Amino acid sequence: MGKAFLLFLISFWLHGVGGRWEYNDEQLQHGGTTVTLLEYMGTSRFWFESLQNWQSELHCDDDGEHAITERFKPVRSHRLGSAAAVEL
Image 1 (cartoon, rainbow, N blue to C red):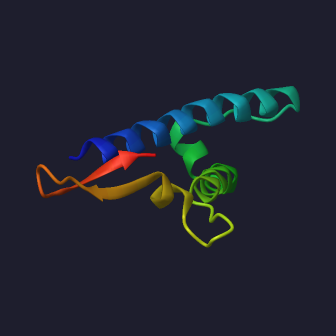
Image 2: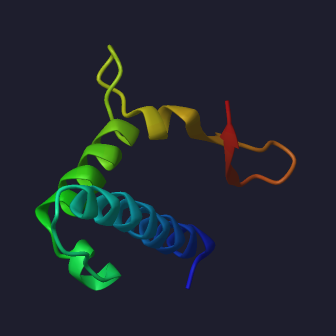
């Protein structure tokens, strides 16, 4: 499993943990019932917040370029003759 995918899974899990904590707190304040992590991850609220977050991460700038691809552009190393991602 790649490091990037592992970081994605960890961030997704942490978003669920934090969101569930806030959701359960709101539920208790209004006399509702609490949910488990898996139950929370099945709510429309979790998916709405997750997709909103990813949409903001992958937004396009004024030139139509994706911000994430603009930040990590491949550059050619003259010494090694290979492409490498470099943060600008």
